[in-house]
Length: 183
Image 1: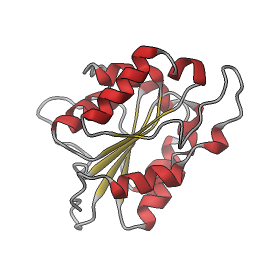
Image 2: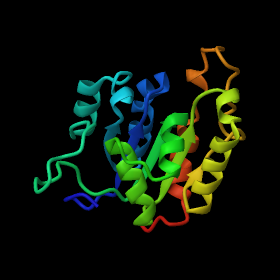
Image 3: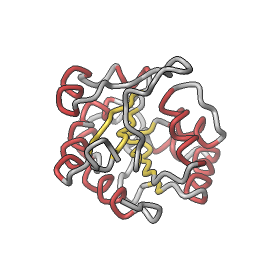
Image 4: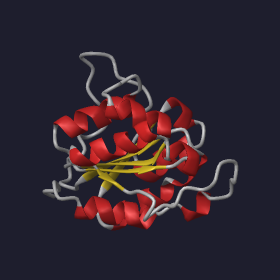
């Protein structure tokens, strides 16, 4: 909860053009009374309008770890949505690699039983790679709600133009319905 008693969502984006539409998720969550903080991977940051998101949320967009001993500028999360989640980030998260702030938060979030929803976003060929399928299954077994092909059908390689199909409303609904959610 933030200092006003509102639940806090971390909207985590990684290096996909779809990240540019994260404002849709911000608006959905804020419409339900949630405080939203955007956390972007270094590549995800390339696709978002940082200034607009900071104005919209009232929080800085974080992309880097803070210095030890310094206070965090964001309130702690009550839930996280990793959407869009690239295959690179999916694979790293599933084996505990925390080389970016978003991955560190996601790894820690599983350990702390923070409700997390993830939506891989790439293409059918990459998502079909057996270790990536295993990564998504493992995360699901560890309590992460992974929205797959039934919610977001991956496009064919090099197809492009699928950004408008990303299921932001379903992401938000899955956050609200996550079995670990307490607020």
